[in-house]
Image (cartoon, rainbow, N blue to C red; front, side, top):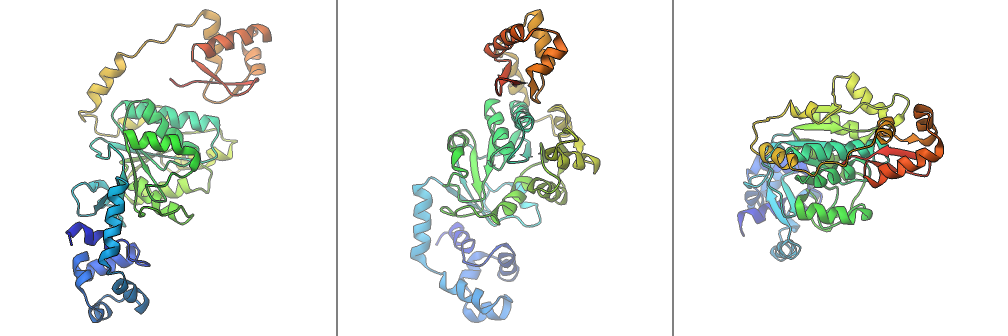
Length: 368
């Protein structure tokens, strides 16, 4: 059996997770040696329970391993052990790296700086816009965006990275052959086409609540810095931020409305010393800007089509808007324009792709 296939078997032994895998490797050195170990060797040296030892012995099934390999080939999924040259160096350095990862997509290789972006699933429009904006700006400047493809902030960050023509990597809490949530099917396909999907869980693994904290340590582990866009005081995003700090990563946070529970977490992180971020450059200055990926991206951006200019009245209205929703009544009060005139100007701004209408009464600036 090929050496890498021993790793596939080793990481799929039922009931033998990361900690027990580490115990076995500390004693036997390699998965191949674990395979060759007899029942007596495992009992004497591994300090595992009889149930675990029985699971190891019973899992030594060549036909099952061959089926797993055939499934990987059929589904176009790559397996990389922690010893494989394609396994990310950054991930190897965390306290508890996965001993094997599954990857699906056309562009897995991470050679540029990386930034993880996390935040609330049920985020506000402000959070969604900021995640998209930061994902787009950072990706267009050669930063790879790492996130978890969850609803809300994660999805917006991936979408922004794709819109910026950059690289993005989605870390999943299930098998890479499964799209979760189901509503993200289109995003799943786009990431697979222009970036990659990664998981430590084998193909066919359905999502479970306990898998997402495990997934989050990989998001932070693959990131040179972690940006928290919007999060409640007690949330998975703050746990990910704690993991990032434990892994020696920089943590960034976008400030929010002090009256919003969704900003309580990010504002708390800033109080605790996370770097306050208002623009992509606040993160870029901490990363290696000598990376060769930056120059062509900037050149590409300089050739982008200029935006259609705004008339005087249009600019006045546009300047009243922000990434947080603003009502027509608020704009009327700021500008002094009549509702009829305002509706006309807002329509023009919408046609010029400068704003987005959330409802008949609420508008936000559109990031483009």
